[in-house]
Amino acid sequence: MDTLAEKRIEGLLSIVNNFEIEGQVTRVMPLGEGFINDTFVALTEGDSPDYILQRKNSEVFPDVPAMMDNIYRVTAHIRQRVIADEGDPKREVMTVIPTNDGQLYYLKDGDYWTMTLYIADTIAYSKANSPELARKGGRGIGRFQSQLADFTEPLAETIQGFHNVRYRFKQWDECIERDTAGRVKDLKEEIEIVESHRKEMLDFWSLVERGEIPARVTHNDTKINNILFDKQGEVLCAIDLDTVMTSTSLNDFGDAIRSYCNTGEEDDRDLKRVGLSLEMFEAYTDGYLSERANELTRTELDWLAFSALYITFEQVMRFLMDYIDGDKYYKIKWVDHNLVRTHAQMRLLEDLEEKYGQMKKVVAEVAQRYLSTACA
Ligand code: GN1
Ligand code: MG
Image (cartoon, rainbow, N blue to C red; front, side, top):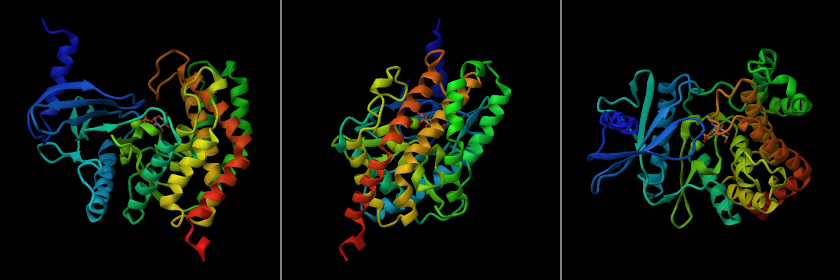
């Protein structure tokens, strides 16, 4: 009799065959550490390309068809840019594989399955281990934003208010009120820390609401494992485009700093390990601004360093809200995983606040290096 795992793989093979693939898929295996979707690699025989199969999380993404339409249009746009720059369109941008009847997803038993081309000979890091890697990551996201600077069609909002702290505070108030898992009573200090940031974060967000910080097409989930590097350590492309939508450049920068420049882990239990490496911060900023300094406004540059505080704070709220809600959003490995994540992100935020003055200085110095007017 077939084991459960064999049955599951057989099921996956039958899903794979609905997509317009070259060659014969022989194996399907789990891939990566994403917190949201289920990801697999589908291996083919011989010289045919391999594929990435994903079951999208439709609790998190209420409109998968709209999300896939965003991804398709954005990758098509980037592909034109890559071709114009004589790059490799199969490696320097994600390729969405349609189903045999031309759809961007395959719907089975309420699950949305999607497929993209697997890009071979690449490395996805879970941690930035050197300033050089951070610099390259910064260049990669800078280039991604530049490639989309002239993308002017509207995009669907795949997750409402994703990096909008006003919306997050609305969710927060409701979450505390609901207290679904009965955990609020043990979280007095954590809740106070969130509350003590309310005004500062909302004031910052007002700049976006007033248009002083411009809306742009951005990635919105720039942690290091969402960037593919080649074997020489150069950035090939950004992956995990589920959250590509209109937001601010700052959010991509801030989220990357939260990820690349943390000396500890996102979910470190040892808070002494957690903090901002200024050396990594300088390197990432240098890579990013080498691509973007002349395309950002003065106000964006002025608030660039703050974006790391903003996104880390938002991440504190999101992990804590999920803990209070009884762990519905993020995949967890242990029962208090979301609380451990909250504490680690709080520690990072505290260190960012201590180093904010130095971070601003770094941004100003690096920007000066690249602003063309600096030579005038
Ligand atoms: C999630 O999908 P993944 O694992 O790359 C999350 C991000 C969080 C991140 C925290 C759609 O990213 O927003 O910053 O976890 N993605 C979504 O590690 O919520
Ligand atoms: Mg990811």
